[in-house]
Amino acid sequence: MSVLETATEVLDVFARSDIERARALCAEELLLFGTDVGEVWHDRESFLEALEAMRELGLSARWRETPIVADGWVAGEAEFTFPDGRTLPVRVTLVFADGSLVHGHYSLAADVADAPPRGR
Image 1 (cartoon, one colour):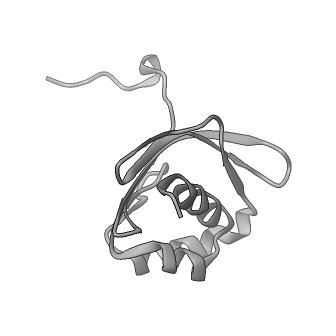
Image 2 (cartoon, one colour):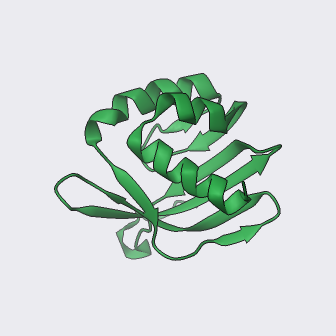
Image 3 (cartoon, one colour):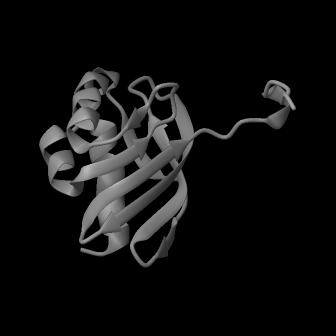
């Protein structure tokens, strides 16, 4: 399976909260950043526990356009779709070693004008 095929499966499996397939795709020593406050996981099992709780969202996911693919990593823009048809665009970076996901980063685009001022 190519790195793009594996990344596409990860995107789908995470959205659907397919715990057993996610376990097979992720390294035990996983570092994953989600889109929400507090969504940082430092190992596969704690992420899988959170994934179980997300199942009720009924999400699906797809790449919005073909992502960039390089040696061991994939990055691009994706979209989560809720059961009512609403969508949420996300930026996704997935890094693989020996065929397993070792690092992932999901983020939302934000307008800098909406950010709080920086202190000095």
